[in-house]
Amino acid sequence: MNRIILFVLLFTMTIFSRAQNIKNGTNSLNIIIDKNVLNAEDQNEKEIIKIWNSYLNSGEYKNPKTIYWDRSEYPIPDYFLWPVNIKNLKSRTPKVQCTIIGIYPTENNHYALKTSLTRSGANGEIVLKAIISVFAKKINGDYLLVSSSQYHKGLWKKNM
Image (cartoon, rainbow, N blue to C red; front, top):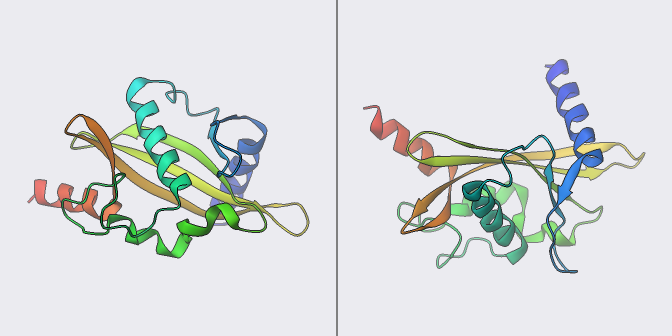
């Protein structure tokens, strides 16, 4: 277990030194793409990263009329993010760093997107607060975010 924690901390530290910034406005969350995400410039991945970036910077949370999430199975699909307090990411002190650490195709025509949330500790150390997993799927020609619960429920139904 200690090795896993050490690996995550070392991996996160390399994120700060080797990453691509996503350009946003001045009052926006700084989201970077780790340089190890080699497919970030591929068309599908770019679209998914764009909608994730837009969602995080929108400040929208628990909106039953969301334009970012597939609402076909859950009326408030981003509710699972409540422990992370997505709504207040931009205004936290110390500042939160969002880093996309992976995006890849999965089953049922979905993509998985992994994002780390880190901040600086009191002694300058990097503190990993969370690793968020969301999924995305093209629905009616556009990518929408899909909650982990909905994605895994779909796999479970498929394998019954």
